[in-house]
Image (cartoon, rainbow, N blue to C red; front, side, top):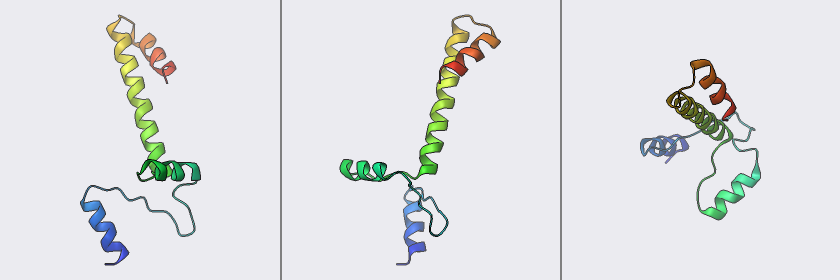
Length: 86
């Protein structure tokens, strides 16, 4: 089985593959690699970690905005509260 066939099979099972340029590292922080090995899981690539963090921040901001609106804040006040809730 070639590398491309293994990648295709992994993606078919729902896996996500991060491709990097030759000579580059997908994970620059070796601590994350060792932590993942100790915990028996795969380490996520830097790009995947950054994407998840951005999605989490956006969800926290949206939830804070909804909470402020529920409490009766104006749109401007709710937006200011959401931006401070990072």
